[in-house]
Image: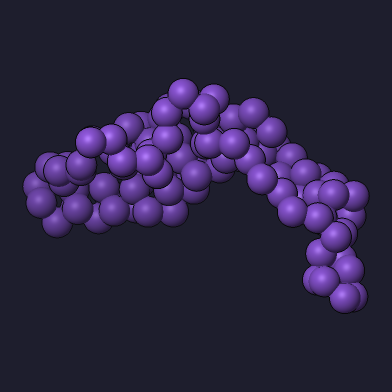
Length: 103
């Protein structure tokens, strides 16, 4: 699954919103491009320059395969408790936590 999420969101955000918006804006503003905050701009540029439609489709296939595996083999249905498992993913190595306030 390495890289799948990033590739999916950057390609989708660029092709479904960023690129059409740029084109519409340029057409209405003498070819100028709009200001875009750095955070989405980096994602859109990455999606435009590094993620092809083929890579996007491969990512969707990998996501579907992983989703099927998780729902059929890991978090399986249980009629009494809804699911037979709890999935927890550590957010860090334990050296820091965004949930702990430092004073």
